[in-house]
Image (cartoon, rainbow, N blue to C red):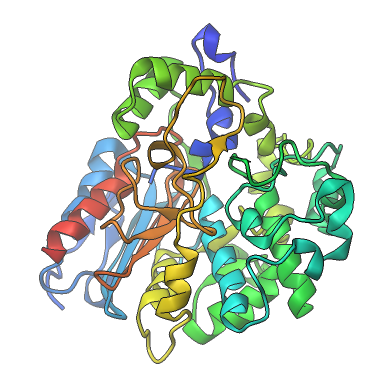
Amino acid sequence: MPNGTPEQGNIGRRTVLKGMLGAGALAGTHAALTGPAGASVDDGERGVEHGWGKVADAFRKNFQNPGEVGAACSVYVGGRPVVNLWGGLADREARRPWRKNTIVQVASTTKGATAICAHLLVQRGLLDLDAPVARYWPEFAAAGKEQIPVRWLLSHQAGLPIVDGPLTFEQACAWHPVIRALEAQKPLWQPGTEHVYHSVTYGFLVGEVVRRITGKSLGTFFAEEVAAPLRLSAWIGLPEKQEKRVARLHEAAPFSYEELLAGLIATTGLDADTVTAWVNAVWAPGSVQARAGDLAGALTDPAVYATRAWRAAEFPAANMIADARSVARMYAATVSDVDGVRLLNPSTVERMTDVQTDTTRMHGLPPGLNVPADRSFWMSLGFWRACQPMPMTGPASFGHPGSGGSIGFPDPDAGVGFAYVTNLWNYRPDDPRAANLATAVRACLG
């Protein structure tokens, strides 16, 4: 929990987790890459193809500066894997090495997988982005929500980042109590006029639409329609038999309010006065953005994220567990053919990556404060678009970061699918680890 208000000069890691930054930052060389305590990245398929050594170099350097516990990175190009790296420790205390089959929580990187599921239904003609949500989910129409279109759920413009609750953790894991609360919830603003990051409710909102159309939970639909055809090690609702593969999460050192501001100034290019006013208005304790991560009290205790109950439940905004290869392969299949599987066609990709938050104002900003969307929340229909704070590998890139540092994205222009996952969760806005790897990918692309 936060150790004080922004005005008191101290920002806790959980404040950032709950806020927009909780979504994150952002055959050849067969030499082993050594991580901490002698853990290594092996060769062969566990290395890099010729011409991609710069990514291996960046991966190795991340263990030295800024530091890693365990991590993995995967890159596909043209539907083929060219980078597959892992190293370090899956559990620092137990000295358990990160192995080929290690999986880890990827937090809000989950949102991209959920969005892909929704767009599969759009592509099949089963879901209309401009139709009212109530067409598919009639009970949603209560409390003035009858005209909210599906696209506003995907673009965080529905005015439902919180529910009044209260809700317990057990209720949240059970799904339906959250759905009943969302049905009764009145939007915080006139839908479609503002936006703010729906940290947890996004997954329930989009997931319930998918459930109403298909009769399947989001986790089941993802497993059958995305993970199975692509042979992914990725789950939204982890089967118990996979528990032994899960990496233990570790947290990086806390940082000060001043460090937060400096990181945001560096990554957004905005001036200090704008960034200070933005942070104080939107991320202060008790703000809507801070409350969004609590889900009406259900997720107040951070200890729940280390439980079997959390991993077994379906939180389609926040609790996918996967390896880097699977996230990269999933995104590669949105822009390329991957072993005979292509998830989305080019017209679907073009439609779903149209930026939505450039014409609405961020909720909670004081009058007169201008925080451009392309410096803060450049959101399309379920995906972040490449922007100054998150350049990815090119202007056409789209994807989603996760709290702590993970990210997955494709670049349609380059045919790239990229993923980075880690168990050292760092909430700093200027965390360089994924950015270092993406920069190396750009260099290799030429």
